[in-house]
Image 1 (cartoon, protein in one colour):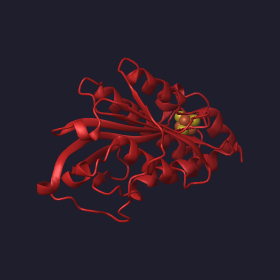
Image 2 (cartoon, helix red, strand yellow; image 1 turned 90 degrees about the vertical axis):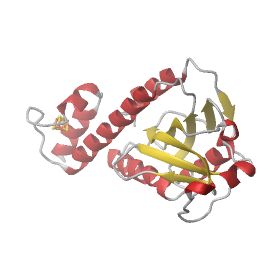
Image 3 (cartoon, protein in one colour; image 1 turned 30 degrees about the vertical axis):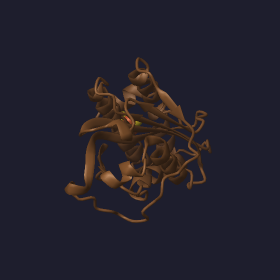
Image 4 (cartoon, rainbow, N blue to C red; image 1 turned 90 degrees about the horizontal axis):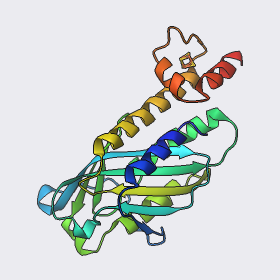
Length: 227
Ligand code: SF4
């Protein structure tokens, strides 16, 4: 699976000019086990931006990267981005890989870090987080929240490694993070079309721009349509 690799390079470029903190994923935060509602009066601050996964079969060691302030240093609402680069087992079966991408996307709906309420809608890369005052008092930080998230990703047996990047620095290029997220969504939608459509006519297909850009897409659909 290499369809998202150029977006992984774009993500590296996005963060390359900022100092980074790197953490191990060995202190998981507690999981509330179900959807929790944090009321406004109990909220320390909100983070708003994008949250998405970039899936690859390249080797990705587990790691949490923070660009900007940690939770305990943030005093007011701000923009943010959460990008998970996820290594999956390379089975050579694109249908399996596509199913995995969907499964990996559902992780965000099954992870409930205590005092860290993540909100996102299906078919959207937008992510908003409400952090409770209590969680800040209990020293919630991106290392322990990230550790819990990585643990959840790795409950899927085919997930081999996860690099989780949190960006909170105000000077980051958030429109570029949004562009990467949108492109990620377009490629996933094109894969969806390829997996589910036997029609192979690039001249009339609305997804042509994606297939012209991403190496291997047309070959995949061509091979699929011959099956
Ligand atoms: S390969 Fe052609 S027909 Fe298939 S999704 Fe891409 S543009 Fe459309």
